[in-house]
Structure formats: C-alpha cells, structure tokens
Length: 265
Image (cartoon, rainbow, N blue to C red; front, side, top):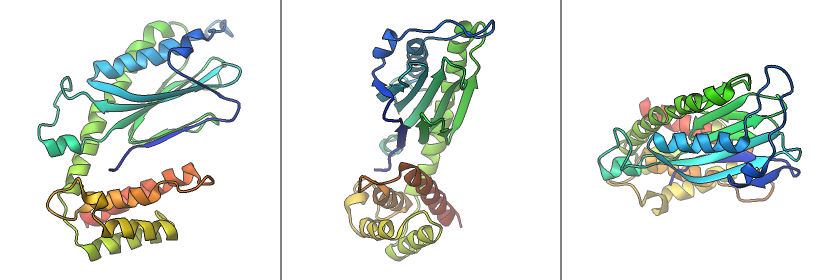
C-alpha cells in the first residue's frame, strides 16, 4: 500500500516524549512585554482535539523536545473517522483509497520560530528547523492573547484536512481507474529513473514489484497506475542504515509527479 511519508528528525540530544509527558514541562516566563509562551502540552492537546472535531482520528503520534526544553516538534498520523466525517466516501474502493494524512507541529519558547502546523501526505519536521508539508501550512507568533487565539487558529488549520483528503482521494481514484499494461509501466518507471526519482537499484526493485502480484492485491481489474505507484513506493523504502530520508522524500515527490504526468498525457 502507498503510505504517507513520516519524517520526524531529531538530534541525538533531543528528548522523545509522549503527549502526556509534555504536561510535566515547565513553561518559561515571557521574554518581553509582547511575548506569551503557550504550554507545549496545551498546543498538542488542542491540535488533537481539533483533529477529532474535524472527523478524524490520531492513529499514531511522536513528539520530541530539545534538551533545554525550549522547542517542541511533533508528527501525528491522521486517519478518517468515517462515522463522523462530513462527505465521507461511500464505496469500499473509495474508502480504501482514502489516504492517511500527516499533521506536523512545532513551537519554540525561545522565539526561534513561530508556532506552526503542517498538513500533507508528506510532512518533514526536523529539529534543525526544516519544516515542510505538501498540502498546507499555518503559523502564528507567540504574542499577547495567544491563549485566546490559538485554539481557533488550530481549528482553522485542521479544517484543511478535508480538502487535502478529497484532493488525494480524487487523485488516487484516477490512478486506480487508469489501466496500464506491463510494458507501459516499465516505460514510466524508466522515465522516473531518468528524472532521478529512482536510483538504479531502486529501479530494479520497482520493476520487480511491478512484475509481481504482491503490490496489486488491493486493485481490481488488472494492472493500473495505482499498482505502479505502490511498486515504486515499495522500492523507495530504506534498505540500509545509511539511507538519507531527505533523499527518499525528494524522490517520492518525483515518483508521484511523473506517474501522474504520464497517465495525463
């Protein structure tokens, strides 16, 4: 199955924490007249509450805090709650193709950066300040009255989950409805390789996956572009300890764009 790219990077000195652990952290005094630190635990809890109110569930969550306790980074895997979701897809296939989404968050008591949220199928959150999502982002300075403003702003940002879900769902449905024969898929993968979406070894693995039935078990009616995307995604999975996850993220974008472009031609 094609899955979200979960990228939460932290240094060796950062401290992994659960959401409940965040409540044990001290919120520092303001650094100036307009600075208003907001507890990390409240930020995380408000985000999860907004996600649930929007008709989604948090399937997995990860948080790290810098050693000095001044910066928070988090990544949440979000899945649709079809019993509560507005405009939920009705068919089994449409629900199957409803892709899980990611919400990234960060905050800094030391004013190094604003409070921020990201939404996407691919989200990159690094404690070296790299912060990127492919479907939307939001940020707010930690100034006076942030405790009054932040919950509403979080809800507004999380409301973007529905548009993101529909955008991805429609795209994946098109892939699933586009038949491809073996040779055409081989050509597309070769072109992905030429565009640096796959390394030589990854191309070999992708061709092997495309040529077998393992990644096609969730498709109906034979080979299609969805099957091809899954084959390429499977080939991108890290196979060693020295794999660059940033490189994997970069290549996954090229793979997706090239396959979509090929079937639209």
